[in-house]
Amino acid sequence: MDASLVVVESQIAAGLPSTTIVGLPKGAVRESRDRVAAALRSSGFTYPKGKVTINLAPGNLPKSSSCLDLPIALSILVSSKQVASEHAHKYEWIGELGLDGDLRQTPGSIICALATYHADRTLVAPAGAAGELGHLIRYHRQISVAVASSLTTAVAVLNTPERPLSVRAVRAEVPPQSNTYNDIVGQTLAKRALALAAAGGHHLLLVGPPGSGKTMLARALAELLPPLTHEQSLEVAAVYSSTGLDAPGHRPFREPHHSASSAALLGGGQIPRPGDTALAHHGVLFLDELPHFKPAVLNNLREPIETGSATLSRVGYRVSYPCRFQLVAAMNPCPAGRSCKAHSCRCNPEQVRRYQSRISGPLIDRIDLQVLVQEVPQAELLASDHPAIDLENLRQHIAEAHQKQIERQGVSNGALSPRQVTQMIREAGVSSSLLETLAKKEFSARSLHKIWKVARTVADLANENSIEDQHVLQALGFRTLDWEGGLNVRP
Ligand SMILES: [Zn+2]
Image (cartoon, rainbow, N blue to C red; front, side):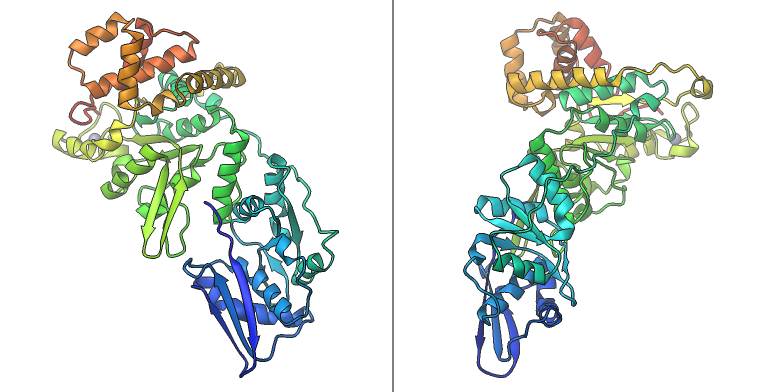
């Protein structure tokens, strides 16, 4: 998600009229010369008669963005002595040119502005990027950006550098936070799991029949998470900017379909684009119908979940996208789903086992909280007196519990490594005799770690320092499913 500075040089030599772009032009850059030639003519400049060579340095970096149109046009104007070049070094330029000389927005303005800032220059960007850039300089006042609506205005910036057209810090409209949480009827246990997941950064699995409201629960988690910090908000804006999408304004929520490919989830393509894991950075990634995802795709999710970034290696490039998301996975207890509601499942045990075993293994190891979601009875749904809780108050508690973990151990409880958990258990001594008893029972070390981590979060959310039996008991409630040797839920 970093932009590289590209130097655009051009040379005009005598000879038959021709234009060559060198320096690994790919995709849109190959067609750049036609757009540039037309834009120059329609803006009242002349296109040089002769052999024009344009060089894009560094030569070993493939370049594919049409944002190079503007610097290419300016470079030609400078080398054909149609504009003065003495102030050119103060700026970086981006923008795609229309045939009429209009400047059009390209993805990644925010990333370019950050790179320009680090190079101690001013970015001149298309006017269309003003909103996005205004959002950026709201947080980073020292970043210097200017906007131009056409090639002519960009040239004017070069000619009169004392009065560039600066971008004002526009207040980006942040859409109001929705309130899914209080719209969910019943589901006390699942709602408690949401609060714990939000407070401790735990991944969550919801198991329940179709129509039990799993999607709403997943959405509600994104609302419970503490608000984005300025730094996080910029990171999210940078990811969205690189795809040309508008940043969501608060915690992102992404819901890829189960037919999604690895490229759709992790990013990819000939010109690399971030996938849903990166678009869910600092937010929630919801995988509904988890067993229907291709096993290879689920397998590829392990790296991003463990490292917080998705790396693509292709011939000629290597890209790394940030993706610290919180995973909410959901599934039906049996393969027949809709036709087998609770208590009337007619699938045979072997079918159920095969279906559930599709998700066992390393991915499931990463999910600390598992909840069985029951369908809410019709009568309860229709009852009118659902108590709404004070959501602001709950968010406050969650944010405080999260802050506590960062101060104590640098990461949320959900991100503790097995070694850290073991160390914590040792340091704390086992103040809970219950946990000691459990250790002697059938639980594996892995399960014990999960129980400990969740119990830690229960205690944090209650603002208590030591882990007591009651915290452990609550943590046990979120592993009602038997995970030893795979999933074992009776539909
Ligand atoms: Zn069934």
